[in-house]
Image (tube, rainbow over all chains, first blue to last red; front, side, top):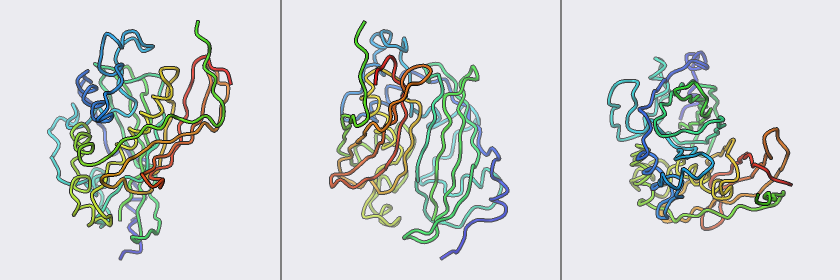
Length: 173
Length: 141
């Protein structure tokens, strides 16, 4: 069992952007399918799928729920069909940074933290996300040493307005 | 003009709740492209140290947003939300989002309300503690 997974290369990569994504324009159908899944088996709120109803709301039309992911399946940039991995890409961050990753077998989502901007995501919006490692930290858990990697993604729309800043902690062991 | 909504410390959210298993998780995998074996295959869940496959943290995250939005009922916006995943959402369990208002403060553009959030399973075990800050329009405290 490893005493540490951290390397000088990993420490040196903190703060570097390792992923930049540009979404395809968000469609109303993307939003409808999202809320059908996240409210299943109950009918989702009308504001997310009924355009006539949504016009009467404060937003004046359908907006995406805060947690909506416009990058699922494929993005406009990078211009490629992402590989359809049958498991989570354990060393995806370090691979993108061009450094060696930890020799671990498992990855879990440790936690999330989102600060939302003044604008919501709407149909037609093109969202850009830039992600960097904010910190690496290690803790000892019941399954041994666990590497906690906290990343921060900044999402902006096509007008340069910040949609959200999203922090995520990955636990690898 | 309707009366402003009154919010005070100690107010509770309604308790968004879903019975969860592969039918929820497969639908979520389909919209979030999250076809990860630990969320679909009991053996993969066991290999990762759990008794079975388990649900996505991202889906509990969505449930927390749903709960807060339901409570807001169009009277405000979510400004921030955070959570830590502490225990697995195992198969065939009911996940309930609970929340209590812990702070109400006047802000420049409305009233800022802090909510202590958590998801819990059927036995009352906390799966993910969290917190949200929302901005309510035209609220008196």
